[in-house]
Image 1 (tube, rainbow, N blue to C red):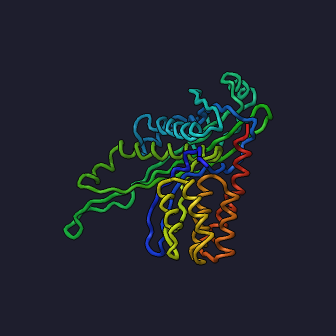
Image 2: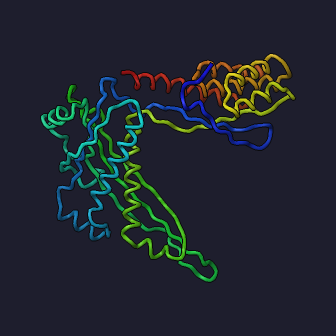
Image 3: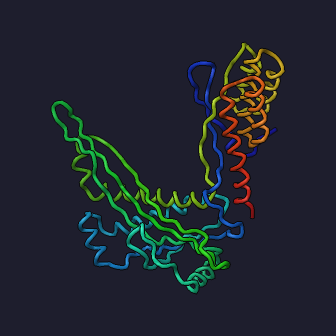
Length: 336
């Protein structure tokens, strides 16, 4: 058995006690919403230009935003969205230079664009759907500044960047909105140093914080509509009951040698005491999950907990059950 997916490369973290350790690997999870399989090519446009330019200029003065900061932040949203979507094999993505007037407030969406304009954009970019950033707003607050003193010489400061966004996905073939979503994304930071209290008042620090938060907001929306890779960790056992096959199998797991790990761990389930068999069964479940065989992994947790009473396998079985359900959803999302 030779794994052909990169997420089968796992990293190990040792835990204390009970011969336990932890192994980490990547899994692909389905998006919160399922976009129909007919949708393959996405064109992204910016429809968040503020309508009231005078009010927007006044807000920039009051909030001390730098020149063109609002436009740079909107571009960061688009960069984050593109990054999220292009990292997936699900879509062909075209980030256009199209810009239209929308809403100056991220929590308020304007009226949907007319379908004749959507048809024009879809034909121009040969796209199945048009994803619009329809509303955008940002603010930055300095929080928790600590002035140095004799008792506490270190200067510290923090800030909060808040981004309000609104997106729509127009599906012209069906004359429907495939998605409509508005949300807030907040990032906090904290740092220290002798010049930090002066630095936090500069426009560059605020602008950088807003741009970073905006990029993450774009990533967040992309993860809403496309499957995303996540890193997970699982407990496994390095030893138990003095069983040498279990110990050797665990070492093969550390080397990512899954074929040998499976052979040794299966031997451990056929000999030794109850503890060794239960722990070997649990480890087999972990290996099969890494290899992507969730059903076989689930069966080994049934043996580990149901037959040999290995406590860690009970909750692990619930995790695998949820993953099996997710995989069915993921399969539907990735079908073309």
